[in-house]
Amino acid sequence: MKNLIWSIVFILCIIGCSVSPQPMEYGVDVCYYCSMTVVDQQHGAQLVTAKGRAYKFDAIECMINQMKEMEDTEMGLFLINDYRNPGKLIDATSATFLISPGIPSPMGANLSGFSKSDDAFKAEEQFAGETFDWEGILTHFAGRKAGIQ
Image 1 (cartoon, helix red, strand yellow):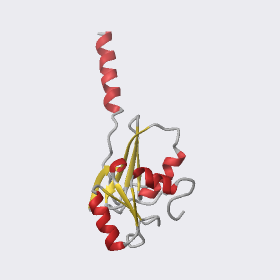
Image 2 (cartoon, rainbow, N blue to C red; image 1 turned 45 degrees about the vertical axis):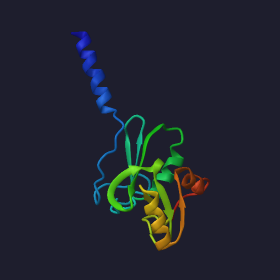
Image 3 (cartoon, one colour; image 1 turned 90 degrees about the vertical axis):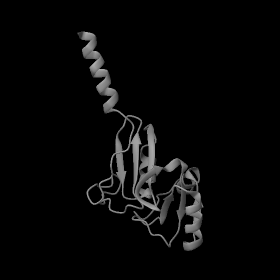
């Protein structure tokens, strides 16, 4: 009986600590970094720690800024909205990013993410700007805050 109880506790811990995104509730969720309501389905983002805690953001730049403050926290997922598929969360580490004044983002960094690099390059042709991969965008904002604070 004692082993059964410990098995149940163990299973509940595993289920309760799963590393998965939480649904974004646009117009309801509040950005963890800047406290603005998350309304823009093209620029939202989410961090999920290795322990399963989710942090929601109104803009990719807010997520990047928060990551700098959580350097000692082990992350499980880095997620962003796909600009071409509003509301769809994608893996930020495999996304292509565009900084373009032609596509304003909620906090002023003009930063958008795309699941397909071709979509990012087409947007760059249409709106001008500069494209980056995940490491490139982190390097671009290293040592300074992303967006208007």
